[in-house]
Image (cartoon, rainbow, N blue to C red; front, side, top):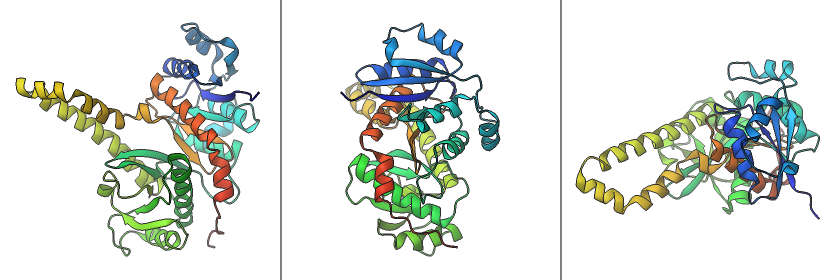
Length: 337
């Protein structure tokens, strides 16, 4: 009989740790044949666990006395805080005690730790953070969405290939359209980075449709949107903020008169579905692609529902054997000297 997958979770990462993290972990046990390893300060985790009824045989604690915060330099923090919840959670994946790791902690520390502790797939220069963005046609996969602020053209080439593999194997889109985020659709537009990346991606064998402007992303202009981590994170955060602002504006208008309130009541189901499609807590975490193991970044403001969905995404990624598919399918050219 197959052993249930063990998922390590950083219980101390994020704005709502450890309370919401632990609750989300317990909620994820329901209906899923998994075990949970909670990494963090044992006394704080046990205080939260006492609030719930659960199968104690499916939950274990990795006692971690240190916590990495947002204001710490990632490389320094990983080097100096070897007993942190991030470092010990990642170590569990490397040693095979966990199949994946989830954290709502600092992106830089998770990326640095994962690269050092778990390691990159052979040939991958930099792991990238991918995020699913809702659009008018479904979803686009934004890669990189914040892991590598400074990138090289060869990084963007690898992001394009990994993003294409993700959308084909996880989302099920055959021959996904790959677009390069730029300030214009014309090939000659952009800075030196995207111009050189354009040439590399064009010759790579992916279904490259050329440059894509930010305004075309929410319209579903591409299945995979390739960007350096700086521009990608700006798009990601702007999308989150705009969605939240639009919902507030729509609600305000719908409550402005008796007639509009009646219309709102009649269309409540449609508005609920729209709000859900933009809710990061329903999407789950964003995977780091290019690592030997599975690492998923949850939103820094994650509540219990977001953590539960991040764990569920780990189950899905593991079933699809995402890391293996990238390693086997990605034919990476040697980076230009």
